Image 1 (spheres, rainbow, N blue to C red):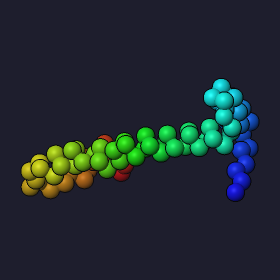
Image 2 (cartoon, rainbow, N blue to C red):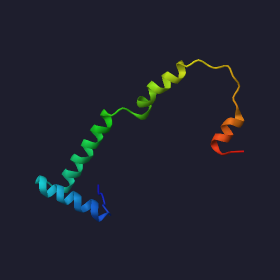
Image 3 (spheres, rainbow, N blue to C red):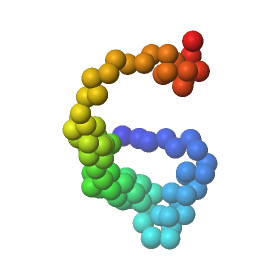
Length: 79
C-alpha cells in the first residue's frame, strides 16, 4: 500500500519529526495518527457534550402560548 503526500509542508514536517525521533517517516506518521485516534476516542462526542443542554431544555415547561411567527421573522430579518 502506498500513501502519496502532495503537500511539501506536510512532507517536510514528517521528515523533520522522523529525523528528530530517529525513526522512519512511516513510523512517525503511524505514531501521529495513532495518538490522534486515541485523543479522539477519549474526547466526548458532540452529542455527549450537548446532552446536558438538551436535557435542560426538555425539562423546561411548555408555555402553552402560540408561536409568535412575526417576532421570529423580525429577529431573523425575514418578511
